[in-house]
Each structure stands twice: as C-alpha cells, then as structure tokens.
Length: 473
Image 1 (cartoon, one colour):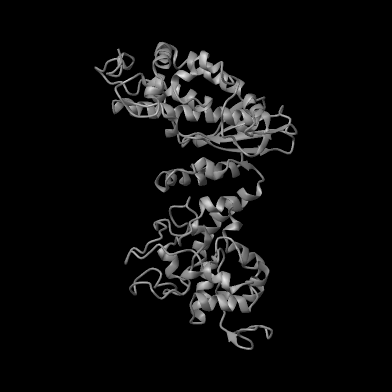
Image 2 (cartoon, one colour):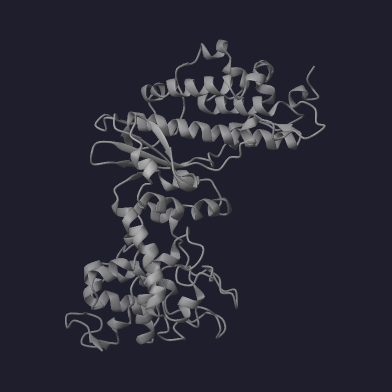
C-alpha cells in the first residue's frame, strides 16, 4: 500500500495499491500502467488521475487525449520514478528512448500495441516488442509478434494510455483479456534473452556513428509491405557494426581501399581523409556541381563497359523520344538496357524527355549540375562522394529492373517518377580516434545476371535491340 502526498488536490489523503517488486527488467510503460490499473481496479482515466495526483504528469486534460508511451511526452521521468518507488534507470528502460535514437522511433516503432501472447499472459510487455525490425519475441522464438489476437482477432489497440484497463476486449481467451493470467511464470531465462537484443541496441546508440536517416532508406512513400523485408535486415546490419572487425578488415590500411566482410558487409578505411573539411550537401548549384565529376565518371564507366554494345540504341532512343512518348506507358518493345540508362540520366539531370539529354538542349541548361536529394549531415568530402557513388549505382540497378519489367510486359516508359530509390544501400560512418574514417555499407543483393543485361533473353528470343514500337517507322 502506498500513499499519495498530502498536498495532492485530488486523492489526498487517500491511498493506492502498488507493488514496486512486480516490475521486471525491460518492462514497458504500458505494462507498468496496466499493473497499476489492475491493482487499483481502475481504467485509463483512473491511471491518469493517479499520475496527476502523484506529480508524474502536468496536465491530466492533455493526457486524456493522448499519452505517448514510446517516449515520455507529458511524463516527468524523475517524478514518475519517485511516484512508483522505482529506480530512474528502470523507468528509462520502459520507453523506446533507451534503445533507439529519438529521430528513429517514428519509423522503427509501432504506434499500435505489438505483443507476444506468451509474455502477455504472464503479465509482461516490453518496449522491445514495439520495434518493427523484430519479427519474433526474443524470449519465445516460436511466437510471432502481433497486434491482433489469434483467438478473437481483436485489434489493433493503440499504444497509448487509452488502451490501459480497457474492458471491451472480447472473450475470456483473448490475449489482452488474459493479461497476467499465468502470474509470475516468466523466469529469468527469457529476461536474459531480452538482454541480448537490448545490449546490442544500447551499444549501437552509444557508438556515436553517423547513420543514414532511416526514413530516407526505407522510402517515405514506400508501403508497409515493402518496408517489412528491409526492416528485418537492420538487426543484422547493427550486429556487423557492433561486432569486432575481422582480421582482414583490421589490417587493411590504405586510401579508399575496400575490405569485404561477412554477409555482404563492405567497409572502406582511409587514413588520408581530413575530417575537419566537411561538406554539407544542399540545394545550391555549387553543391550540385561538386558532385558532377563523380557522376560523370560513373556515367562514362557504365557507357563504356556495360553499354558498349548498346550505344547505338541509346543514341537512337534519345533522338526519337520527344514529348510524345515521355511520361505515359507506350506499347512496344525497346532495348531494355538503353531504356534503363536513359531513365537513369533523366533522373540525375532533371530531364523530362529523353531528347532533352542531347547537347543542343543541354547547352541552354546548366550542364555541370547533378540533381541529388543528398543528406542533411555534414560529412567529409570523400565520404560524401562515396555515398553519392553508391546511390548512383543503386538507382541505376532500380532503373534496370524497371526496364526489364517493361520489356516483359511489352511496354516502355521514361517516367522517372517510377524510381522510388528503394534499392539504396544502408550506410554508416565511423570516425576513429586516430583520425581515420571507416565507411560501412550493405548493398541490396543484385544477381550478376541482372548486370549482364541479358536476363530478359531466353533461348530462341530475338535480340531485344531489334524491337521497335509499332508506331515507329
């Protein structure tokens, strides 16, 4: 039994029921408040009144509308720890801020209650369950994290104070209705398994690296179905970052020399980069021109190697494709390699039709400018150029996949709005104490057959370059 302060305008001198020893490591704020509601036989409004009376929140009116449980929001962390007789570290571990950076929570944590049915029946829920990059419960590897009850299909439930102490759940066997039915059957062994992923997340946040913005890597316009496979790879990426480097990578010490590590992790270490000269990419023309030489080198390399036999196709399409066939889907087959290359150039040179890539038209435009969304971070110049080069190749791979799809469906289009940048590599920059820098990245897997520009050809097929749309002469 605990007592509220005598200065409380609501409950003083009434008492409320609370057991601080019932809180387990890595337990979430939702689970803590759920126990508070059960011990006092109250609902969400009663929990808010208790928190307001104990000084844990400043305004119960705003909390009635929404109380963010991923972050602290209106909650005062120190006052909440004092009110619940817990250590400040226990309260901090109950939010997502202990495991993710604040700007990543919106993209990586669910706003609906995700739970493991086994954990929930024992009266336990962790903020780790809310993370979208985890498919299964760390303590019960056979249980898939879900936001719908497997018995009555109830859900999703908002992950805020409104779902605490809710009595509208259907059926006695509902996962949420059966909360804490099995008492304290959660042993220390599952909590140890939670500690493994928790240590990885905490160490990754404390490493002080510069990571690619999560939302840009996922794609702001990408649906939840397409985001799922990319999110599941994050744990593997972070394990590579937090693990000790391999002997091959550790002994590699040369300027911009690549060292390939396990599972697609590639690292470049350089001791010649002066990290004091940092460049922040912006929308001004000077920043765009600074990357044009990198783009020009990649452009010439792709044209001289991969597209050597398709240069006549490229020239032919650039001359013939005007405003009549630029954005819509057109019937017919054209050279997929040439279509991919032209779409890639149009994307970076901000052209609306293929014939705008000719020298005559480009003479009226600024020729030494490349259009790239870039990054808002101030990075060393060579790191910025490397990241730009990686994204150039990734976007070229996406254009190639689009062109191959058009070829199979006997259509073609040069609409660059179809390029979603969904194949961007995930990268991270590590600044060492000795002044050197390591760039880590994990590219999307691309088969060698895709870059051979022959994946659309089968036995007995004609040369794709010989196909022309029906309305061409």
